[in-house]
Amino acid sequence: MPLTLANLGIPQIIKRIGGKDETQRFLASLGFVTGSEVTVISEFQGNVIVNVKESRVAISKSMACRIMV
Image (tube, rainbow, N blue to C red; front, side):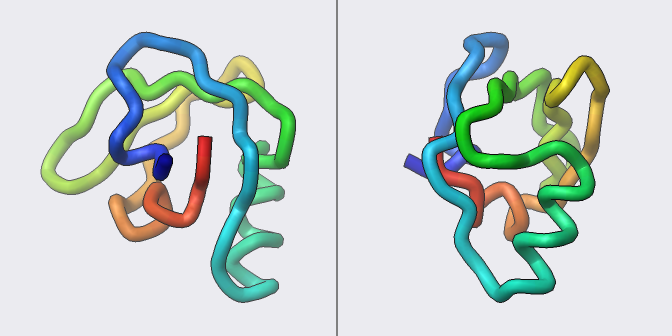
């Protein structure tokens, strides 16, 4: 399921990253890599705030849809 459908506060494991190569590289630079743990903290005005690699990152809903957990 996409990250946008994950329950708040429950750690998830990233199964797959979709999108073009440049999108995948951008997400990888933020710490979104297959096998890593990610937790959705909140959703705010269409953006998703997540904990990944001990950092809080805000990404757009369209980017979050490309991250499968």
